[in-house]
Image (cartoon, rainbow, N blue to C red):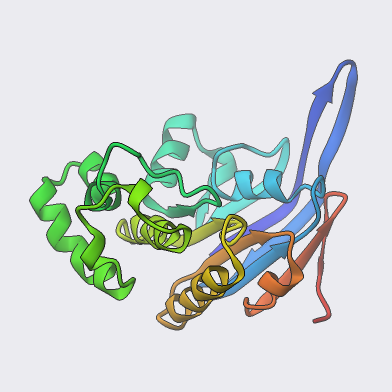
Length: 223
């Protein structure tokens, strides 16, 4: 599903090139739930951006579902972002002027579906996530946990190859965070491939496998 070989990435600071990722090799099999665990400044956000095709490596190979990401044009990368990756963000990134249904179906409407077609396609996912009674509400009327469920629904409706979650419990209280992690476990049990970025070991433990990232280098966790 994900296969990265010798990924390197750095940024220019003045006249100096600062390495962020160093010879990273990373693999995720279809149906896995993997947590990438690391502190601030460890390189985990940069790695997430490369996995999500929001940034490109300076060198190395990246294959997603058999496709050579490192050889793609920007247009091809945009297609991969829109079709193959479902993004789940800490701050939800919902459109405040849209109601919940409009937020969820937006990826499908962008692909050319009518609103009615998109709504019909999404209803099973909406019911699965327990937000069918909130569809006409605006994001400001929902709790943090409910907003994250909407974010997850929006990520799922396009049937992506992977779900990429960036600190998905970071803005939630403990109880709401636990509910979201239980939901990830349920989705993973249904066959969804999930990669979760986190700084919190307790959150990472909900995944089937933990990979540590420190100073831009990966290692398997012994937990």
